[in-house]
Image 1 (cartoon, chains in turn purple, yellow):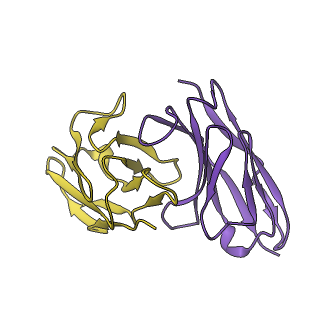
Image 2 (cartoon, chains in turn yellow, blue):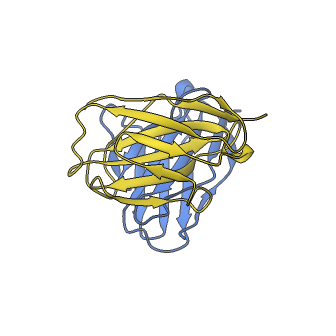
Length: 113
Length: 107
C-alpha cells in the first residue's frame, strides 16, 4: 500500500481561504475513495468530506458550500474559528464502504486573527 | 444522518484485563463499521474494518463483532501500549460519522 501525505496547513485569518494538498501514492480513482477527517484541539474525530470515483462528493453540513474536495486537494473558503483542527487525508483501498485505509500524518489549520 | 453512540466514554483498566467498547448506530449500517485507536499527537490507526476484519499488522488480541446497529470492540488482554482513545466510524452512508470516542486509562 502507498503512503498519504497532507500539506498546506497554516495560520489563517477568519474569512480567508486555504488549500490543503493530499499526495496519495498508488491512488486509482476507480478503486479508491478519499475522505477528509478533522480533529479540533482536544476533541474527537469529525468527518469533513468524501470523494467517490473521482467525482461524487459529499460534505458535512458544517462545511457544505465552503469546502470543495478533489482527488488532490481540499479547498477551504470562508474559514471560521471552529474550522481550527488537524486535518487528515484518508485513502480507502476500495471504491466504497469499509476496507483498509491509509491515513496521512495530519496538517494543522488554525483560524485566528 | 446516522448517529454513532459509543460507550463508555472512558474506562479504567489494568494490564491483562479484558476490555469491551460498544458502538450503537441510530439506523442500520450493515457491516460498514471501522474501529480506530488514537494516541496523543498521532493520527488514528485503523484496527478493524467491515465490523470484524483485522487490519494487517494489528495484534490478534483486538477483535470486532456486530452488524446492523450494534457493534463491539474487544481487547482480550490489555497491554501497556493499548492505553489510548478508541473511535468507531460508519462508512455506510454519507454523512459518514464517528462515535464520540472511548478513552482507555490505566487503573
